[in-house]
Image 1: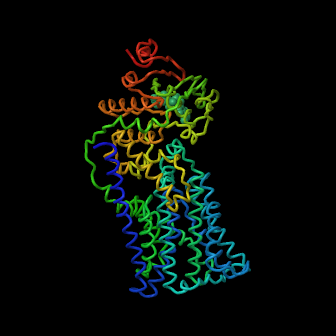
Image 2: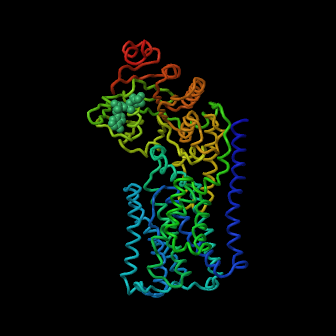
Image 3: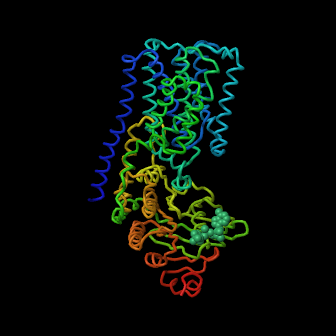
Length: 598
Ligand SMILES: Nc1ncnc2c1ncn2[C@@H]1O[C@H](COP(=O)(O)OP(=O)(O)OP(=O)(O)O)[C@@H](O)[C@H]1O
């Protein structure tokens, strides 16, 4: 099958799968819609509560499930939304505002405070961030208690009365279902977009995410805005459902419910957390005696999930990834497809390093290194263990700041320590240990490489506007082509953590090719490959350089280096021991005695 035919088939199959994935959501919506006809008012209220919680949890899912930020205090934004809507509608601080306008203002306030609550995530590590969100929850409740003139203090205040036809229990249910359906749609749009993929990349492979140009702060701020707005709107709807709110309604238990719904749902899924929300809301209702035990129940559930099914409901439902993969899969790259991918980016510029010095404590990892990588050439960087090869790649990628020396790309200086701007300069890389997003499919992993090329904004992705959809199609096509080029088109939909080591190496190359790099830095790509795989890798790297890309190849397999490199630099203790053509290096006396051996 040609690369283009397999791409087209793959895209069609993906379309079919998307439709199948939509069915459970439609079924749940249908159940919600018929509840007023088949159930009593009590069940209508429960369904309304589920829909409201889901509006919040759908946003929180992006924060916790996708971005991996442990925001356990999201009740803070829920409370904020409930009070903002109620106070504005009651006219306690301003002239009375119509209920829907109050809800809109609460959404805006939630967006702003979502960022305030989320900002510590940019500095604090998981646990500390979790505690900081709880701190916000306490602050909001304390303000609600203390600001008696406006919030009614401990006595509370009436929730907003919505206009007809939403002033009945059924009317409110339908309104909340509409909000829930809308939140599902927009959060699923984000999850499937380059933004969603980037969130997961930041969560599971932050170094690789930076190397593909993804800026974590910007991304997180956008997600906190969205999740904050949804949480506050949910709070406003909740106030309307409750008809009267007091600070007691916004408990830690409720916050825990939101958080655990995402966890039992499973990371990186929309359906899982939705089912988690339904289970956690309904469970105490059908087992009435359990209501008093709900905190205990949540804690027990959490333990069961962590210990017994860390992937949550989503992993249970992931039937596709339970099918065994064919053993002994061969990787058959198609170097002809590489040219189409990389040729666009070919540059006449040279990547050069001058006088680079870098020490770790007392160890001089690089000691006055000069290096040039030319477009369309393969430059081998070899040397004994600890000679400074990976450190050199890390300096070029911006992870390490050299003490002295400069890096130039054409006429531009490459600023030290700027990891996320390398992709924009056309520099892509792979890692000594593959950096992958294990829970994402191989295709999604590769699409990460195209993140910074997207022009459609977060809002366009949120609403799935045409430019975003067009870009996604192009990106998917290119990722399939990249996978065909490296010989992995048979496993595009498979979870990346199910691949063999050698496949992961090729997958990383596909992700780098997705960037259409002007320069490709490869860190020991042949490590762990069979002789045949190394031969295929060699053909692939040759094709990449033939397309105009400059390749810097760090490798211990001397045969591969001498076979495909145009130029070789040998490092020893951070210094250049020798540099020249493969022919010259092969017979260089000191290289032979220090590295190659007799
Ligand atoms: N983050 C770090 N902190 C401290 N020392 C480091 C760090 N990274 C590298 N080094 C030291 O710098 C020197 C060069 O290491 P580097 O990883 O670049 O070598 P290498 O040539 O890539 O080796 P290998 O072939 O084993 O991967 C070594 O002495 C190593 O111990």
